[in-house]
Image (cartoon, rainbow, N blue to C red; front, side):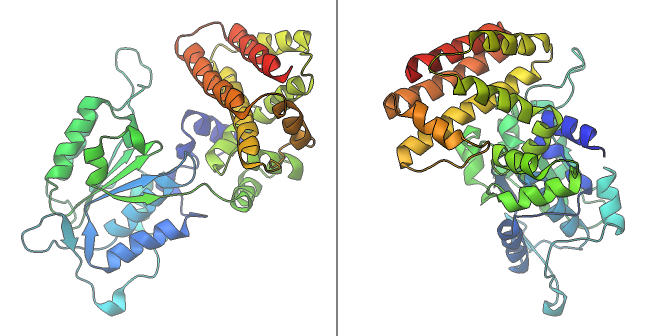
Length: 380
């Protein structure tokens, strides 16, 4: 996959780059992988797992890695079934990791979406509008739960991966809850969630939870060196820090010119407290010309994150980590003018304003100008 194609996939769904079905590499999440392997070794494997953490840190990659691992092994349920499956393996045959050789037939079939004992649930295309739905609907969940109640095609586990569970609408969530309450034998559900607080408490309580933390800067840089080697060391470091530990986010920013947008944002902030109005209007025109709204969403996220770093630096009394040279001094200068509470209120207002403007297709240029005028008022 080219960098441009990878970044396009990451923009739509950072978790989709590189394709988790066919990705043999998992970096920076050894603790979560070890937890899954340890549960397997106990021979009493929980029937449902909830993998949480930010987008683009490896949740889907880990889920498919674990699915391939289980599908490559024969299993049997303990008498009476219930919540757990009993694994019949001699001690000498216990695995030491979850990796499966990419040349293994199971790996190849999973990568090609051709394994009969694995199903995935994700947002689908609406037949009427021909556009990707904004949520997972109940029919998709019912199809998957029906699959789980069938006999395994190959005498092993039947596995369902939901990516992402926090994107289910209420009817879909309730349909999934039913199968969690009465899990079929030899069935494993792997639920991914970027924002687990959006899930029903009853769903969370019926899953064993694993939290995947953001990747380290070193790990993101290593992956950027592999998949975007044309980046300069300075740009790669800036993207790694902007991504906040998400390789999917780093690639999306690299692909849509996010670093250039960020430099323009910081340049406008440096003009404060006397805002460069001409530059701001030119920047707003640039966002307005993008009919997809992708640039506006990226700018909203970057600006909100910048204010968030200012708030954090004020709250902790620390020098913030610089993404561009001179940012620590800029944050200190602007943040000193008003109270921490004022900046916190602004941060919250900006996030809501950008979300509303994007969701309601409001004038993006005016939303940007209003945001900077608010920042200017605080920085004066």
